[in-house]
Length: 394
Ligand code: AMP
Image (cartoon, rainbow, N blue to C red):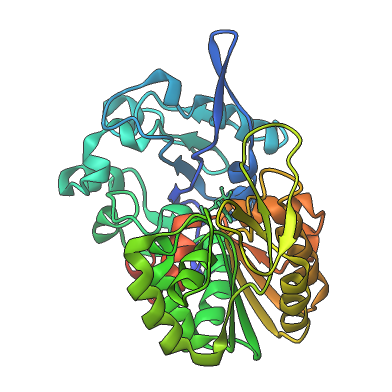
């Protein structure tokens, strides 16, 4: 179902409540907190600029970290507000509120063309509890609501779901819209052949994704540690590789359901341990009892590249090996290059896959890198995200 977009709203002279995901990483420095990556602020910059250009007064709201319902100065959104002001070129008045509701905030409400950044929503336990009174208080600040926080859309909180009951219209921001467009098309009507690449540590984290994708994709390429639970379930030796023994039966069922669609590594890079500086691996087709597999091997890379090169859509979540520790990043980086060169519509989710894409230097060739790890996994699992479901229909 199509949701209202910020582009469908008449913003002129209106006060807009814009829920963003400014959950930026912070580091203590010289007694204050500094932002170590402003990627999330930049991701919503187009939406904020659009709203300002259209003549709205913009109230920006977000959570940051896990303050557990208590005020924690180390998790203030103040540094994010300062960074936003810089990114807006110093031409826009960006004020910082001491709280997200209450009398002081009411006195600071912005004029058209101005921005007010509210303090961390999660300083109030009512945010995560989706409290109706708190929701009403947030809604009372503005005329219209826009959600651009895709990364939090899988949570039914006051600022993502509750307050929508008390606003006249709730629309998706430009970032949210892009996420829904790419992920939505991929899980409902992908160009075929559609290939999914799934990796990472655990089968258990991605069961629903695997189940949903089995019904959707033409090929499912499995790598990372989760491959060894599948291989063990097939009766193959896995040595000391990471395996979830309580998921073997499930892995068997998933393989039966997937039939020939599901591909597993045919060779492996193994090592004795992951500690030490000079890490080295050996390629094997049968994993020795005293070794653990840490990456897909060259024959698997070739086989997976073949499949990827013929794809029209590629969905990727999770690394193919212990990619944080070169040379065990080879499988992940080679597949990142193959995805970039395939010409397919490519959708990458999860922080690790994104890092791999960046370290392979191919980020600009990926159609869409999702900003929401957990949210994109839930989306790929076929679950309707509450923060999306709550938005007004077109
Ligand atoms: P996830 O968060 O589920 O996407 O998992 C990512 C983590 O899986 C990364 O930290 C990788 O180091 C780890 N990982 C990938 N492949 C393996 C492997 N073969 N053995 C152990 N850990 C792995």
